[in-house]
Figure 1 (spheres, helix red, strand yellow):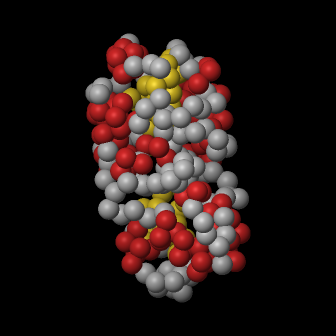
Figure 2 (figure 1 turned 135 degrees about the vertical axis):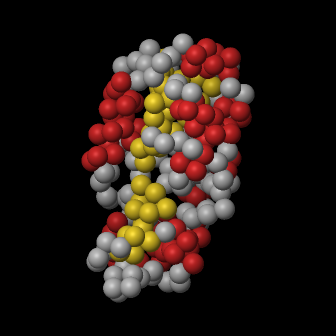
Figure 3 (figure 1 turned 90 degrees about the vertical axis):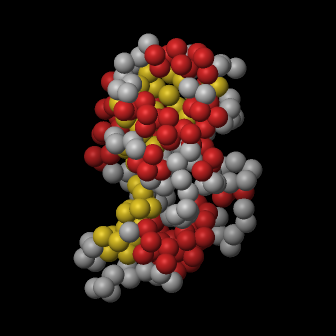
Length: 237
């Protein structure tokens, strides 16, 4: 297994680092991931979570969608952990050029990161499907049943549901920064969700680093693999 000292060396000799992260980045902030033994997908519901957080389910059983969404996907009290804070610091120091994240919690921005590509959207942004009016997370969290706009339209979170395409502008931005990076750090992701996991194919830089508690499909092509909690690793650098 690789060491944090090796990671420090790679960061120090790189000029354009990009971080690509997933749910494991936020578990140390108290937000459960989807695929670990304690994650959302290991729990039992009337419908599989993949079904509930799909576009079709949202349209046809909006009330049940929001019951699950409020109970299992909103964590307004969560705060950035050591990984979020370290990445923001690396950006301020001019080492890190961007964060590409599959997370929807907004914790990278809360930590101070400015250039963040949110592939799957954000729970912090919500808009009326009829008139487009913006609503904050608090409006969704505190409302009952199906949240509605003043105009009567349904308010939908700006989160990419199963069956919905990723935002073109976000994808282009993420692919662009990954392609230009001389070091790509992949952290807290099992790399099984596509198309996001396929973004690694655009990396042509010198150093590919994987920091994850369990093995990933990118381990074989990485020149440094650290199997440890990502907050613990970044706290050490």
